[in-house]
Amino acid sequence: MIFFLIALIAFLIDQATKYWIATSLTINEQIPVIGNFFVITSHRNRGAAFGILQDQRWFFIVVTTVVLIGLVWYMLKIRKSGNRLLQTALALVLGGAFGNFFDRALTGEVVDFLLFNFGSYSFPIFNVADSCIVVGVALIILDSILEIRREKQQAAEIKQEEQV
Image: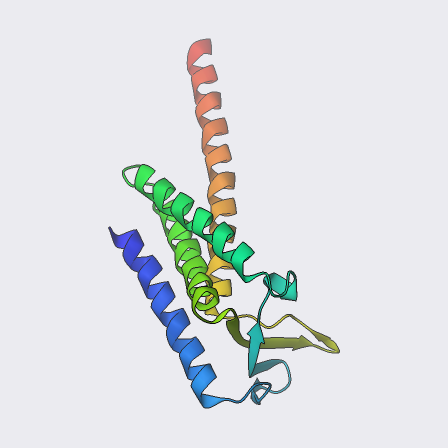
């Protein structure tokens, strides 16, 4: 199944980049990439997105386990649907979720390193796994919009055929 391979690749890229940051930079060390706008930095997050729910390791492990099981189950359920967009989206979410789950299970924290500054505002530091999850969710939303459109179009075609 190609989509599980996509999830594995996302996971491996995430883990490789986190390993590189953890072994190459000290905590809070920064490497400017595009001036002050895009900076690679070494940060550890013991919480969720935006640093919420700090030090809730077991909560994240339990919730993420349920999510991972649900994702794998759903991916297997729709594998013959032919919906490549949704399957790719779910694979990205699976790879990203497993990447952060793996870190939390092993060390109790996640390595974050991508920092974007917009003037005086700094967007919360994130990693490749977070990016995969966000892109995956965006693709799920896109797929949902496209599916609604397809259903409306089919309903209109049926209605038009009934009138003929």
